Length: 248
Image 1 (tube, rainbow, N blue to C red):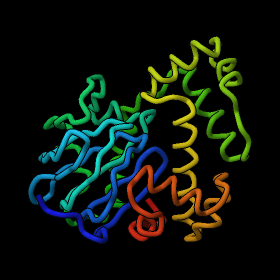
Image 2: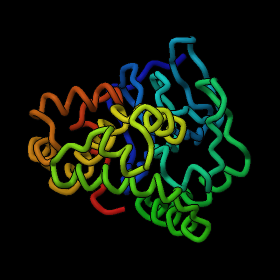
Image 3: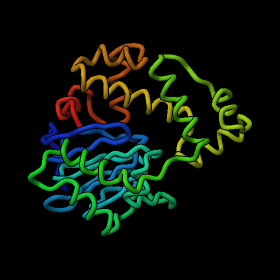
Image 4: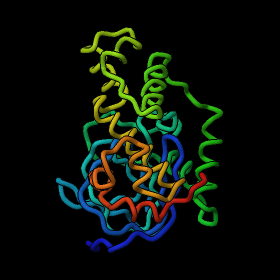
């Protein structure tokens, strides 16, 4: 199996609810992120290491929360928030217990059509979002209100408790916890941390200042932010930031 490179080579872009990378993956340690990862090999299989051993796939879905380490591979990889309408549009099925699921031919076709070789990923991301908007499935009014309050609290740098959100959803706190995990695939606490992390990355792409972005997103300091990025993506935020464009 090919060893991981010391650096990543390629391009990336980010927009609300989705990130995309196209290129040659480099050094990263075992990690788990609260996004569904879709990876398509561009000139051969995509290689991964996991607690179950090493695996190779032509095109694969890694559900949110699954631990893995991506080895050197030329790949198109998308990272999709579990609450995004793209989960439905791309026919992402995360009902099973397996950490690896082969992508359907329809999903692969939609990805490759959105991101042709001669197209920058920023344009491809815009094409994918525009193409999916026509058939966009809005979240339930209950989930829509919960997500709106979570994101509003993040932007205002304030905390919103499980009890607060349970009241918005007209559920008891205990029932809310079960319902939220059923809907998103993760506990509320993990999703709040994931939102804060993505908000910091979005700010870093705009400001190109990691310390300022960490502070704006509510991290204690840049070291705290660096640890969170490493745990979620397996690489340092500066290495990740070097791949991103400011505009989707």
